[in-house]
Length: 225
View 1 (cartoon, rainbow, N blue to C red):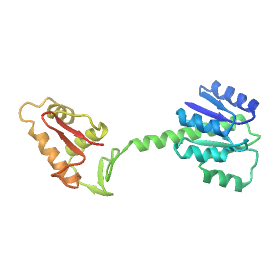
View 2: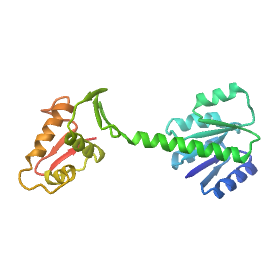
View 3: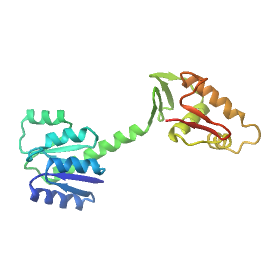
View 4: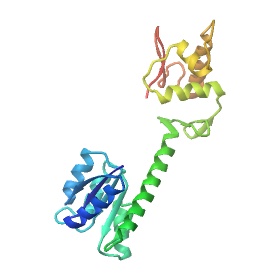
């Protein structure tokens, strides 16, 4: 896990960095809001610890700028404990608050909790595949178009999930048969064509002019993301 620590108190940053690295985290540091925004834009972080009171670009402004391009979890550090200050921070995009002076054990506990929540959210988002009005809930094996459930057979669902998980990858009829049906099919591969046609009828706005399930003539089928 990679964490960005931002505070103009250099000794505090050094102490946080030391403790977090001992926990196995990779830590980058900055000492002002502008640098924090630049680093968050250039690199990928799992969490940002951001002090509120900094010269020039303060933590609240930095938080808002980061939220323009990233949903990375942000824990704000503040020397003030008033509820109004925390509310302002949350409205700027902060996920949690730690009030100075703080126990490093509390900060580490909040970091672990925040990273667990972020991991759970990411895992949940991976279970939903979306393309335009079409979405698949892969945990419940349900297809929806415009929010309405579409009735698919087991093989139709397996086929569309495979294609949506691998957009723009062209599969031959033989490959689709082997992957979806789970065995080496001997004989007519037109069963794949039949399932593709049925999927288009159920999922495409205009099955005669598909926009999602595409044909690569002479090769096979692919999903256009």
